Image 1 (cartoon, helix red, strand yellow):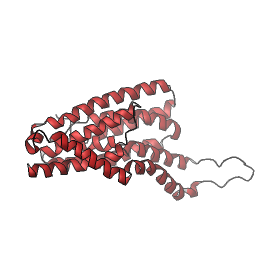
Image 2 (tube, rainbow, N blue to C red; image 1 turned 90 degrees about the vertical axis):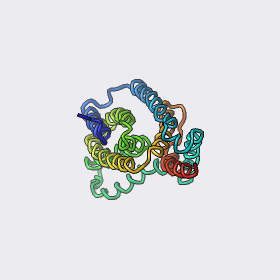
Image 3 (tube, rainbow, N blue to C red; image 1 turned 60 degrees about the vertical axis):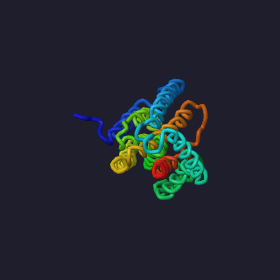
Length: 266
């Protein structure tokens, strides 16, 4: 029985969030900061390893046969340059970072009627209702777990049949993050597991459809380009450099298109 079916990585990720949130509700902040930093460093190193393996797709025979052995690296370079320029002009990284604030403001206004009227005798801040706390936990965790390059790269690769290694690392990251968030926000973080299933499941389905219609050369170009984006993620996890990986996401679209153009001219 083959257990490596499309969507397995998303299922594992959702389970990791549920288990992590459950532990967070039960034990709270028990892990010292030093331990959390060591775990993050380990995940950063493993992400670097996966990035190297993915980048090796530039040596695949189908890719070289379609565009020429000397053009594979140039296609990846061109994809990153064009995608990075487009992403920076569109300010994708900045927009992703601002997404949480905008949603919080909108939801805060929508559920503002859940805030109790202040007691005239009470001079401190108004108490936070359980509903607000639940929504805040769900929203914050959903944005953390579902808005990011590793979500997109991992889900697409899962759908393309390239394995769940990237989503496995993301699951480990989300597990520890869920512990921290649930210890603060409570059961609302558990609901974010549903968001993971829906959003990552949709991206995995998109990768599955692309894998059925996209030639191997284009898939190799996308994989190699995504590998270099993983390098950027690993550098951020290791606190070496804050690479704006969000701005580089358009390169994932440019890579297959550029490969098609070069292959037609080859």
